[in-house]
Length: 164
Image (cartoon, rainbow, N blue to C red; front, side, top):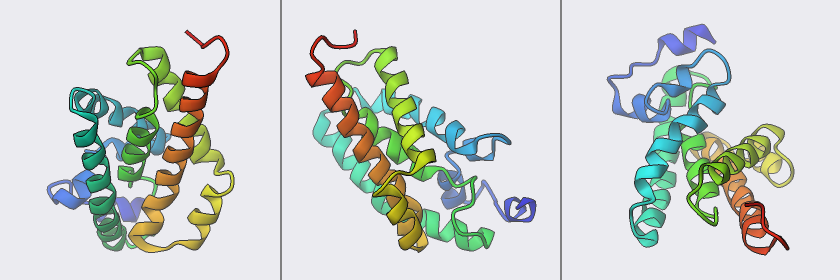
């Protein structure tokens, strides 16, 4: 796996994005590091109208399929741990559903997304195992983000007494 990292060139814009601006190169828990690194970008995106935020997420999914596929090809490893653009997008999807911009809700969103991304319950696991290429790298985290958003939405908007 170290040889695959040597094939990365962060001057290449696809590699830079695929590694979450280098956050995926963190030696321990690169997916978690990528998820944390996505939060400052999310904060900026919260100032945008929700329609623009949604368009950025959709564009990020589309471009992510290409850049993850290309980076995986360059590294010669499918879904190398340092490829974390999918975590960025999954976090942005999950955090779309928080009821208020409060650090506690961001933390809950982060935890829910990471648990889903690591545990990979059905249907996330099915997508992870059955879809290949750039779409395969992206889709399991997109589905984890959608499920995470659904959980956050239900808890945040329909929990009898609320959490906070």
